[in-house]
Length: 424
Ligand code: DLL
Image (cartoon, rainbow, N blue to C red; front, side, top):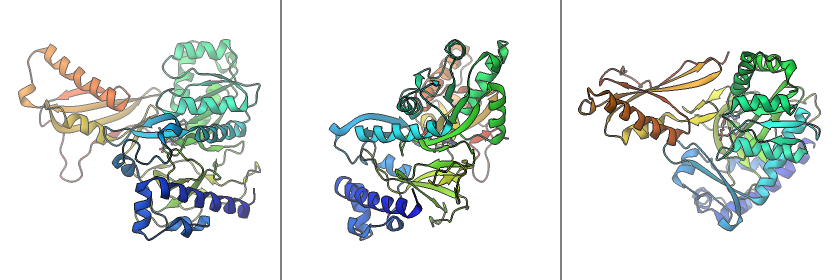
C-alpha cells in the first residue's frame, strides 16, 4: 500500500476509534473534554498529535477493566502481564481482536517464510502471557502444524524437535541458546534436527546472539516484537532482509517521541515508541507509551513491503527488567518486602546469566527481632519470601537473607538493581 493510501486508512480508522472510546470509556472522554476535543476534531492521522498519551499508570489506576471499550459479553479472552506493583495489567480481547491478532502474527510467520509444510514448536509460555497463544494462532493461521510445547521441559522439547522433524521454533532468544547448549550436552548437533526458521522475541537481543543461535541451531533467526497492552506478539516482525521490523501500521500506529518532552521525533531519531491501536475494540489504547526505546526507519525495504520498520529495541526508559522473558519491575519486589514485617525496607536485586539462563537473586535485610539462631526458622522465613515473590513475579528468585545494615546505602539514588547480564 502506498503512503498516501495508508495515511488515509489510518486517519479513517483513528476517527472511528476516537468515536468508540469517547462514547464508551469515561477515562478517554474526560481526558478529551479537558483538552476541549471532540471526535469531530480527529479526522486525519496527523490529528493524532492533538490526543493525550496513555501510560501503564493509567492502566493501573483503572484496574482491572476501566479502559475496556467493549461490553463484558463481547470479551472472549483475557491476558495479563506484570504491572508495576501487585496488580497485573489486564487486557480483554473481543473475537474480532483475536482475529486481528492472529492475522498480525501470521504476517510475521509469512515474512519469515513459514508455509503449510512447516512444523512449528511454540516454546513461549502458554497462559496469561501472550507469547504462547499469540504465536500459536499465528502459526495455525498460516496453516503450518503447531506444537504447543510451551516452556519448562527442555528434554521433551529436544525429543520433539528431533522425532517430529520440527522445522520452526518460536521462543525467547535466551531459551534458544539454552536449547542449543542442552542439545550439545547430549551430543546432538544441528544436523540431528531439522530447524530452519526461528521467531525470537519477548526480550531484547543482539546481532551477536542472532549469529550464535543461527549457527548452533542451524536456522534463520528473525525478530518478533509485541506487547500485551497493544495485542501481543505480532506488532512488528523482520522479513528476509533482517533490516528492521515491519510494523503492522494499519492496526498499530507507531510514533517516536522524546520521553522527556513528549515531542514527536522524526524517522531515524531514537526515542520512546508509542502505539495507537487503530482497530481493536476490546481495550483499545490511544498513544500508549511503551517505554521501549528505538527509532522508526525511513525508506523502502528490499522485500517490497511498504509498512514502516522499527529498529531493534535498544533499551527502556523505565526500570522494567525482562528476566527469562518475564517482565519484572523492582517496585513489585519492593511491594512484597514492604508488606512483610520481618524485613527492613532495603533490598538489592542481582540479575545475572548462568550459562544461557537468567538468574535473579533478591537480597533482603531481616529485622533484628526476627533473626533467630534456629536454622529451621530462617529457612522458613526465606521460603515465605521466595513463595510470595514467585506468586507476584511469576519467576523464582533466589532469596538471600542479610543482616540488618549489610546492604550498602547510597547517599543519592539508591541502587536496587545490579544487572550483570551483557547483551554483547
Ligand atoms: O513479550 C509479547 C511477545 C511475546 C513478543 C512473544 C514477542 C514474542 P509483554 O510480556 O507485554 O509481551 O512484554 C512486552 O517485552 O515492551 C519490550 O520491552 C519487550 N519485548 C517484546 N518483544 C521484544 C523484542 C510480550 N523482539 C515487552 N525485542 C516490550 C526486544 C521485546 N524487546
